[in-house]
Amino acid sequence: MTFVWLDGAVCAQDEARISPADRGFTLGDGLFETMRAVDGQIVNLPRHMARLEAGGKVLDLPLPTADTVRDAAQSLLTVCGLDDAVLRLSVARGQGPRGVLPPTHAHPTVLLTAVPGAFSVSHVKVVTSRLIRRDEQSPLSYIKSLNYLPGILARQEAQRAGAQDALLLNTQGRVAESTISNLLVATQNGVVTPPVADGALAGTARQILLERNLVREATLSPADLHEARGVWLVNSLSLRVVQMLDGHELPEDAPTTSLLERGLRQIE
Amino acid sequence: MTFVWLDGAVCAQDEARISPADRGFTLGDGLFETMRAVDGQIVNLPRHMARLEAGGKVLDLPLPTADTVRDAAQSLLTVCGLDDAVLRLSVARGQGPRGVLPPTHAHPTVLLTAVPGAFSVSHVKVVTSRLIRRDEQSPLSYIKSLNYLPGILARQEAQRAGAQDALLLNTQGRVAESTISNLLVATQNGVVTPPVADGALAGTARQILLERNLVREATLSPADLHEARGVWLVNSLSLRVVQMLDGHELPEDAPTTSLLERGLRQIE
Image (cartoon, rainbow over all chains, first blue to last red; front, top):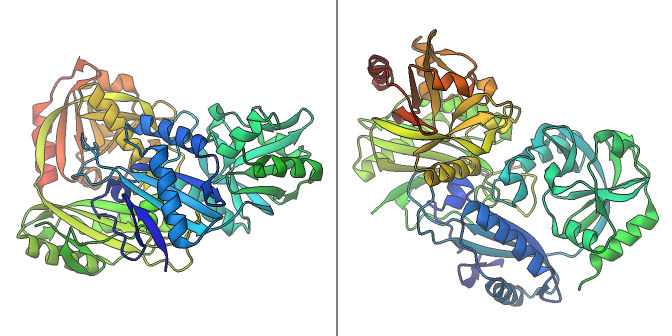
C-alpha cells in the first residue's frame, strides 16, 4: 500500500482526499519541492525551504515550517519503510470560492509523498524546444509552482523527437535550462550555467555547485552548446550527461562528469 | 449542502475526492471551461466544447463528449435546484506516477461544479500589470488550462492597486486581454478587440460578438486605450465597463454598452 502525509497525518494514498475546491487543483495555485532523502533524512532541506519561502512571497502563500516538513518526512518514511527516497512536498492554496483572487485567510493544503529512489547518473538525448520558451521577465520563471504545463508540453515534444528532455531557451533566444534540470556546459573558460536572470530556476544542485566553485554563471547561446566540451543536466535527484543535442553528438568530458557527481553526492 | 458532478456521478462536495496523485493537482495538467446555464441549459455549449477540444489537442488529453457534459449539467443543476448558474467544467489528466511526462493511457478526472449566478453588467477599475505579460508565442496562451498563476498574480497586483482586474500586455507591449476577460475598445473605426495572435484567449463571448459583426479584430497599443471612446471587458458571465485605467478616467459609450449587452444576453 502507498502512503502519503497530508495536512498533519500519514494516511493511505487511496484514502487521502484533495478537495475538488482546492485551488491547487482548480488553478494550479501553489508550490512544490522535489527532495531526496538519504538514511531517512532530507538532503539540503534548508535550501529547499529557502526556495519555497521565496515562492511563498511571490504568491503570498503561507507555508509549513522546516520542522513540520522534517517531522512529516520522518513519519512518512518510517511508515513506508524507506531510507533512501524521492520526496515531493506540495503546498497548495487550499479551498477557495469561485474566482481568481485567493481568499484572504487561506488554509493551505500540505502534501508530502515518497517513492523509493536515489541519486542517479545517466546519459540522455535532448532536443531544443520549439514550442516553449522561458519568459525571463515573469516572476513565475523563478518559483517552483504547480503550473507545470510548459514543462509537460516541452517534454511531450522531446518524446515525439525520441529524446528524454527538452532544452528551453528564453524569449531572447538565450539558453535557460531543461524542463526539470539546470544546465551545465564545459566551455574554454570552465564549467558554466545560465544565470537565473536568463530564466533558469535557482536549482538546489546548481546552487551547491556554485557554492563549491565547481561551476560559475555565464549567459549562453545555443551555438555555445554545440562548441562545448561537455553538457550536463542537474537537479536534486540526478546528473545527466547530454550525449546528443538536436541530433548532433556531443563529446563527454568524463573527468568533469566524475567531479560533478562527487560534488552532488556529497552531503554536508 | 453543495454538490458536484465528478467522474460520472453527482455527490456531496465534502465527499468528492480528487486523488493527491492527480496530475491536475500536482502539475496543473488539465483544462477548464466556465459556462453559464440559463433555465437549466448550458449556453453556447458547442463553442465551449470546440475550445476545450482545441486545448485537448495541444495537451494530448482525452475529453468528455458534449453529451456527457450536457447530461452532467442537467443532473447537477437538478440536484442543486438551480436554473440559472455558473458552471465550471475541469478536465485533469488524472492519476500518474512521479515525473513530467503524462502516462500513455490517462484516465482523466472530469469535474463539474455549479454556483448560482447570471449574466451581469458592472463598472470596474483596471490597472495594467507590470508583473505579468502574455507570451503570444506560447501554445499555453491559446488554451484555457489549469495553470492559472499568471492570472492570479496579476489579479493580486490589481487588488494592491485598488483595482478589480489587470490588463495584460504581450511580450511586444501590445494589448492582449485581462486576467479573466477579453477586451473591447471603441475607436474611431468602431469597436475592436485584440487578435488571438496578440495573446488574447479566444473567448466565447468575444467570438459571439465577432460573429454578429458587433466587434472586429485589431492590434492595440496601450496608447489606443487612453484615446478610446469606451473600453469593456467581456467573458461568458459578464460585461464590465472600464471606468478607470491606471488612475485615468475613461469615457463610457453608453449606447455601445447597451448594444454589447443585448448581443451577449441573446441566446441562440
